Image (cartoon, rainbow over all chains, first blue to last red; front, side, top):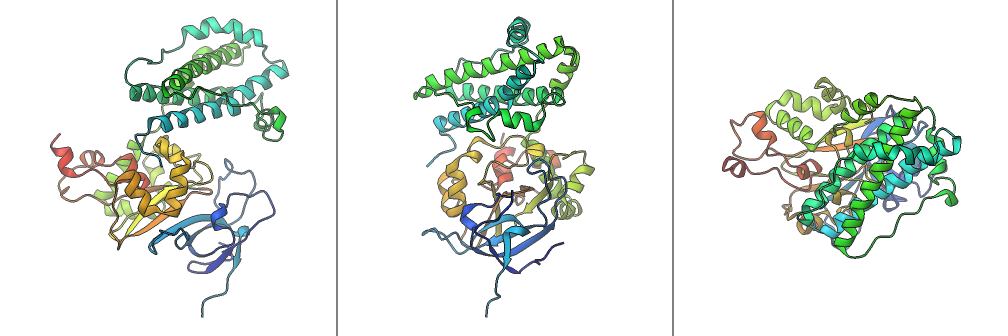
Length: 90
Length: 326
């Protein structure tokens, strides 16, 4: 299915060589947690014409807006080539 | 700040879509066909008389809201008609060629958007004219293609008729079924695409569909901050505000506040908000919680409670009492 597993901490790369640009700026460089593992999604051709590899839903904490609450989460779908391992806590 | 009832913002969103489909889809392909010598400008002009006779009149009188609604319906027809034209000329103009022609690789080739008047009423009238003009061009193109023997007019009409758009009511029926049938619900949540294909939804253009189940402590919300990804194939077009920058940005940074301000929805402090940004190959639909006092309701009645907003997670289904008192 891919390198990462559910609950694993990951860091989003700040940039990624290659054609895949579909990672929003607000999560680039941030730490997140793998929330769901999708594997390689077939029939992806309408967004891109080449295989971008395994896909993950990654969960991020509140978005650092001054009025955000701790129970506000954002989940972003990110391909493996955009993710790096992050050290575990403690 | 935008409101759902913000008519000026609504009109601008229709304008953006219209100009997008004109400058990126229809006109680049027409230009390419002319460049290749398949058709000439004069073919289009000669086809215009027949094209005009095939036009439906756009409702242009009445209230502002009605006119915008009519414009949106007309825009939907224009978009689907353009898709029909695209599939007919598919072997003549390759996707790459029309991307080239649309200025994807070359700024010089780009077709500029038109500048419209500032006043809301003037703008709306201009959009109505633009849409009528675009429809006329589309029809003229289709007729010119039949003259070249590429397709028959019967086939064109058949293709146009087959493009009835999907609607959010599809989602309402699915949600109602899930409320009534626990086994269906669990299959829907674990593998939506397979489960819905069994119900006859083809979903050939949806790489992966995920249904997000709300609970007492979790509310799911959908957005696409990079463009406007949405389960179009299942639910039709999203509401206009879904594509608005203000919704995209604020639902990510302060969802609680945005739900309150824009949708008059107060979320209890013990409920976690999960905002799903559809950045890639997955399309999302929310499975909202079943309203109270709906015991004994059948699937059709329950489906009547499900709103388009509740499938995006920014609203609750209607209350049972509201529907029963109708």
